[in-house]
Image 1 (spheres, protein in one colour):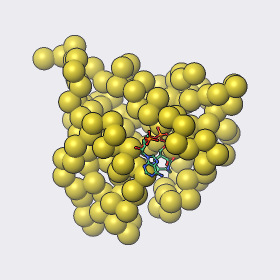
Image 2 (cartoon, protein in one colour):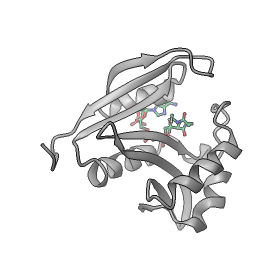
Image 3 (spheres, protein in one colour):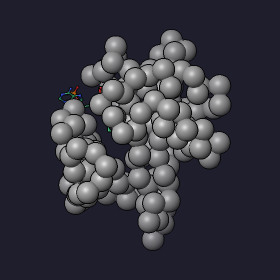
Length: 147
Ligand SMILES: CC(C)(COP(=O)(O)OP(=O)(O)OC[C@H]1O[C@@H](n2cnc3c(N)ncnc32)[C@H](O)[C@@H]1OP(=O)(O)O)[C@@H](O)C(=O)NCCC(=O)NCCS
């Protein structure tokens, strides 16, 4: 089941670890969730009523949707949770039909995930406070309700 995150989800989402985000650590993620949840820019994926994955997004990034963060609990990776969240954002929060995302260059699982979902590389950004460059992805959706 996928739904928008609510304030009561905060603790469960913070508990899902992502040690590869050395810059975007647990405290920063908590702060991020506290901003995104009230703005309805965060979705969670549940199985048996337990939150096992989440994603945050900006629906108005240069007029497009930008996937900011997607994380799946280690115990259930490769079971389609991130895919389900990405599909949900595509279906419900991508009115422009232009879907962007990004990931650090050394993050092979994330790069494979983006490729599987039909994203293509749309550039990169150097000089960020992280070890590797950030790779940007773009996907043109089949439908949009904007010009
Ligand atoms: C990247 C991440 C979100 C993928 O989540 P997930 O729920 O395991 O992804 P899915 O099960 O939907 O996998 C979708 C596809 O991505 C690719 N993929 C995911 N993990 C992979 C891995 N470890 N190695 C290779 N390909 C992988 C595969 O193509 C997979 O499809 P398949 O299982 O049918 O082959 C997860 O590994 C994660 O939380 N990583 C830490 C946080 C992070 O780096 N987030 C991404 C940047 S914001």
